[in-house]
Amino acid sequence: MKILFLMSSVPDTTSKINFTDNDTKFDESGIQFVINPHDEFGLTKAVQIKEKNGAEITVLNVGTAKTEPVIRKVLAIGADKAVRIDAEPLDSYFTAVQIADYIKKHNDFDLIIAGKESLDYNGAMVHGLVAGMTGLKFVNAVMGLELKDDKTVEVAREIDGGKEYIETTLPLIIGGQKGLVKEEELRIPNMRGIMMARKKPLEVLPPVDAPVRTKIDKYEKPAPKGAIKLVDKDNLDELIDLLHNEAKVI
Amino acid sequence: MYILIYAESQNGKVAKSAKELASYAKAYADKTGQEVFAVGAGLEDAGELFKYGVNKVLTVENETLKQFNAFAHAQMVADAAKKNDANLVLISSSNDAVYMGPVLADLLDAGYVSQVISLPEESDTFIVKRKVFSNKGIAYTEVLTDNKLLRIAKNSFEVIEKPVEGTLEKFEPEVDLSVYDEYKVVKVDKATGKISLSDADIVVSAGRGLKGPENWGMIEELADVLGAATACSKPVADLGWRPHQEHVGQTGKQIAPNLYIAVGISGAIQHLAGVNGSKNMVVINNDPEAPFFKAADYGVVGDAFEVVPKLIEKIKAFKKQ
Image 1 (spheres, rainbow over the protein chains, first blue to last red):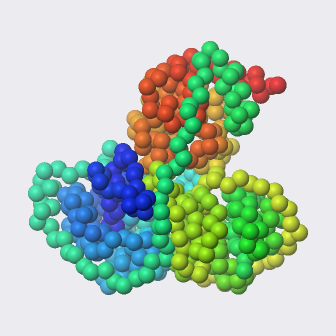
Image 2 (cartoon, rainbow over the protein chains, first blue to last red):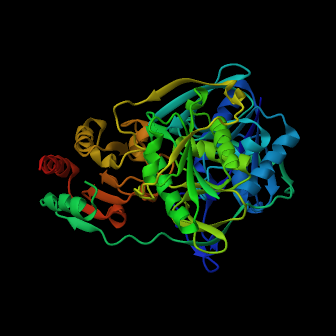
Image 3 (cartoon, rainbow over the protein chains, first blue to last red):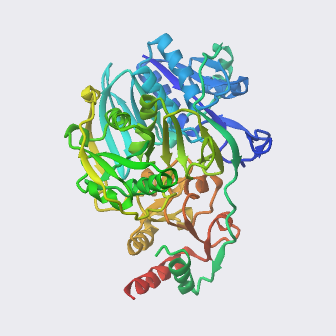
């Protein structure tokens, strides 16, 4: 089985977000980049499938050389080889074209795993666009995946207020999230993995020409919250009054 | 030119999200002299949308399409847009719409913007504001294509009644139903009778400050008297005190209710990223230094085991008035 893992490298979740160049760019100074947390569940799932059924895992990232330390981490966790398409991921469409092009050229992946969204631009669209472009089946917000046989797979997808179980076939693209594997099963690199990762191949490919469909003109931070109104614990009537008359929510 | 909204149903009725989309579309249509169309499958009360400014509802009665399938519904919406000369299409941020969105964008060759929180700005170019970095930033995003697809963020537009004389039109979209082949929904687990976390107007959430799962009775009771859904912090879900579906935060569910009440949750940055879209936040915590006090609108410093039962009694009394 061949698995393609689509990885995005995002600011660590504890990062303070700032903008620079007259608020036209995200300020990367002092930011530590990590594997997108939603992707981590899919990566561990891929490694589990490899250990149980045998699989070759390729990690694919569209990014500049800056993402290589994060790619190496994926290799240390268990991917077998890496491909980096050497480009700034300008918008989701541009990024999806790069990935779809790679998939079409290779055309032999059984399972393509992404995260349901990346925690930087929160678009939740690259993997779905790739599905549209390649004609592959696609399930989003996947919280469970079970291989029934060589071809059949049952996936659980999050729906509003519950879960939906879908029986479908490979090849398949999924947008993974929490639940795909248990939190405590998430893999982190160990020393042996880190040593081995150094010897694993990382291929750098040039991007294909593609336009962008959206562009960010400027950023701003959300308006700061007004000061909190503290209510004495012995005067909860005041809280009810505030929620009823001021916030108008009860 | 027309603006098209994808109207989702909830138990066969027009969903609240569809009314939000209609209100957004109507506000923009009035500025630009356009009309608003809606398309939806199996809406029993489709005419309800006229109240919110929709001029025409394309109703789809095909039995197969009544069951959501991202590829089938994307084709349905794309066909409706194409046949009705709509180049601006709006979808909600429900799980289904998020799933369908990119597939639809591909069919429409549309620039697609997620988590939109503003009407397009009045300028020569088409620019909307969207939430990025898990609510920690706002990006002014320009759409460069003729066709445009916007996914509107949850609870960012009020439902506004603006009744128009609308029409219902039966619509039989050209959809390749083979997308249902080798893709079968075999089971649905949906909590019935309970308010779902993603739709709830009020959410009551608790964290490790509650000391153990046996103490959740008062949280459920508080939620009950408020007609709220319950949620929890990540550590609580990780410890197995509460089901994972209740975890709200950056890697759990992201919610944006009108009121979020956090009990015994310190307010780590990852937790806030999942809830700071809420219109109003109340924090109850015995540690006045908890970071949540910097993020919330209202706060009570005090022991949850003392404050919550009292609050339940006060709300019960208030509801009786």
